[in-house]
Length: 312
Image (tube, rainbow, N blue to C red; front, top):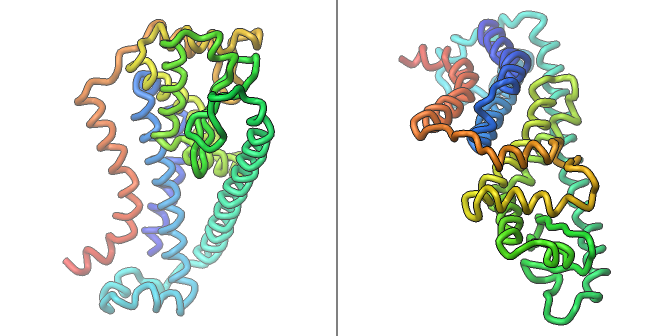
């Protein structure tokens, strides 16, 4: 059991500290943000699984009742293989720290979901106040597309039940039909990929553990990569130039090409659309996706290895 805890700690620390920095400095994520998002999620899943499996083993070693429940279906030889009765003294401290971390993580996730629900509630209340001022025939707050009368061009997707795509009359007047299609496709790309859930997760982890490099980088990169992925969705349908011009037109009234909500200069997004980098090849994409999916299995293999070796 001691060996398992040490290996889980090594894998978790490696995935949480040096690997995120290397991934952030890499150039390939900008070429395929969808694959990069998948890699980040697998990396976070690896760290969380390391903590959960270490917590389970530590709890079984410290508390006899938990040990009996956890290993109840297993034969006695499997329990003996883990040598839980000879747990070192530091395992109790590690178990306590992991339990506190699990409780704090759950609290942060719950807090983020509650705050997100409140923000959506306030936004929907504001929409209900502004909806009566709409010109006749432009839509209602119950439809999937809502047009708001506002001189500033803007468009955004509001998740919830039901989800809603919102565009202002300023955007309708400023954008051409093709540019408007690009903007709406961009927002629908966020909705289809459920980027809001990924943003909630990354924000909660970064808020709860701001000094953990993985979670801090995960939050920053997620806000950046979801925008790049949605840009790619729009550019595949409407063209790179049209999408770039739509982004410029939507943000000219702000005076600068920057978008604080995405943690990324809009000018860099426009440059990427005007000079799109070559995408990963199909073979490289499949290989990267497969390898990333295998990484979260490492903590599970470490945790189950003693029992599997005994049964074999």
